[in-house]
Amino acid sequence: MHSTRLFLVGVVVLATAHARPQDSAGTAVITVSAPFSKPAVLTLSSSVTGGGEIIPPGATYFSPTTTISLVTSDGSLVVPTTTANQTQNSSIASSASTTSSSSTTPISSTAAPAPSSTQPCNGYLEFCGRRYSNITEVCAHNSPFNIRGNLFSNQRLSVTAQLNDGIRMREYTRTLGDWKPGFEASGRKGQVHIRDGTLHFCHTKCDYIDAGPISDYLSDVTKWLKANPNEVVTILMGNGDNAPPTSYQEHIKKSGLDQFVYTPPKIPMGLNDWPTLSEMIASGKRAVIFLDYGANQASVPYILDQFSQLWETPFSPVNRDFPCNVDRPPGLNSEQGAGRMYIANHNLNAEIKMDKLDVLLPAVAELTITNGADGHQSLGDMRKTCLNQWNRSPNFLLVDYYDIGGGSVFRVAADANGVPYKKKCCTKVSAGSRPSASGPTMVALGMLVLAIVTLL
Image 1 (cartoon, rainbow, N blue to C red):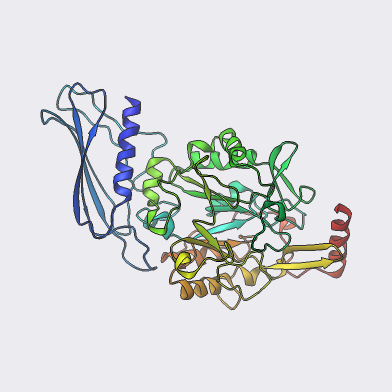
Image 2: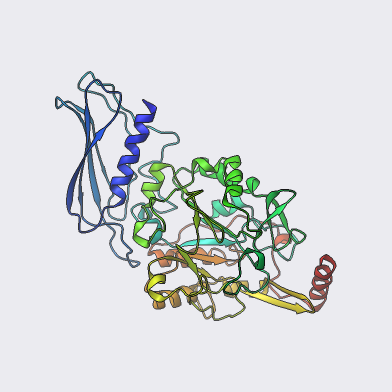
């Protein structure tokens, strides 16, 4: 009986995921192979006042209503269920126990943990009816690298604290050296490296920062997802040593995250192909994983190729104007870019060059400006630039030390989504772990260069 319930849930998600505004009404009849005493037919009837297309901020979101009935061959009603997503107050298709009016075995679609129909999706009820590709989230650049006192760190709070504060995308890709068209893994310095025969999160080189095996980090994400059943998260990894995707698969399984990973129905996914957050939550598949290079979705379908579905603005920028042009993948034209999600890289760096040394470090002295919601060179300013250039806001706003600014980065995301930002930010940290706001002194810079040269 358990397998039958899973099959029915899958049918409902598949059927509702492809609703469009022009589909004012429709009925689908699907024959179900199940251990019933009589043949049964699943009838899906829907009336839709709108779909989940890409909607500008402030617009009215749509209200699909779906009625599902499971009827035996003699007309006996087995499962009558009606679900609705209210305009800007979307409800998740919740499970309900049902009783049978005939001798057919009753079906219960109750799952544990069950998302509540009154709970927000990723912090907002308004997000429940929106597509995954129609929401702006804050991304923690180099999320694992939060080691106190290490100048290569990009964050200062743990992954659990990041998630609790509202970070819904974690990223760890290359930061040292310039990426150029045609470079593959041998010429890049990504953030996942092979050390002692296993994959570690290392900042450029494991001598600089080694955050440990990736399974340890992913285990923390898994624990958080189990405790927060109405949340969808995204993970983007940089394949620094060109490891095969099956190597990542091993760590994902070890961490337990495989129970949550989202497998797309097609390759690649366009903007309007993604499900709504409520559909992802109802299915339990709430972790989207991207790999920048070396993904093979035919081999591991839930490790998604990044650049065929998600492009980026200039990475590791030292340009304070933060242009919103396509940087990676190279050669992507405007029409192609308009059909994919995109990341706005808004992490300002200071570049240090000395002999063979060429390193980028977070420009911590500028964080209050860079992470600001308003003003020239702020995150809010870049978001508006991107909106004007692409007629839609970025899907992900990538920042260093997201907590600097008292929640300003989340206010920018809320403005992009057309919702108010009400949550207090952020997790309290000790004064000693805060990056300097006054700028590095020459003594500190000299010590940094000495330390780096020693490691080389």
